[in-house]
Length: 142
Image (cartoon, rainbow, N blue to C red; front, side, top):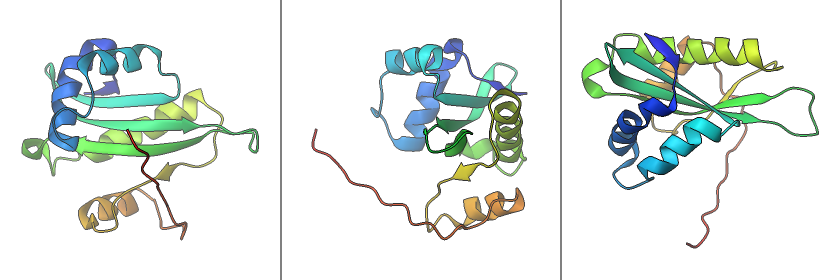
């Protein structure tokens, strides 16, 4: 069952995030706090009988320059044992529907790796296309 995540999912989301991003990227308390209070992010999970198999994160970007929100799908992860079952597609579709019902918007954005061809194929199947924008980033010192 695909649904919106709650703070009760923090423990399992921490384990999924460790698989996805590597261990120690964020603390369990931070995940729990974010799920309870971060109004700029929507987290969607796939729950199979109490076991989370994957997640999708959507950042709700808002600027004075635009009337609408521009939701950006920033993270998509499905445990390897559950892949090729349509779970990622279902979570993304749920996220799109949830955001469309709850926020004024007219488009979604998505960021993925240039070499992540499997993910790109999935996103194209769901209607996403390359908008020829260039994403740049800069690391800061910690």
